[in-house]
Image (cartoon, rainbow, N blue to C red):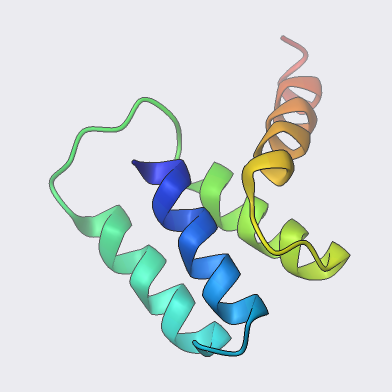
Length: 76
């Protein structure tokens, strides 16, 4: 669910259907929801930012890149 919502928000920003600010607030609201997640919310924020920077419409591939970066930083 987390990946799907993040990707959908990014795609709407990409298409000009949603502002970056509203997408960021939506991601924050999702993070504040009492829904259990198994990854850190930073993964989704960073994936959204990376997809935006590169110009990708969705965040799926960006999640893998960010996760790899985080794992390297943690030396896992």
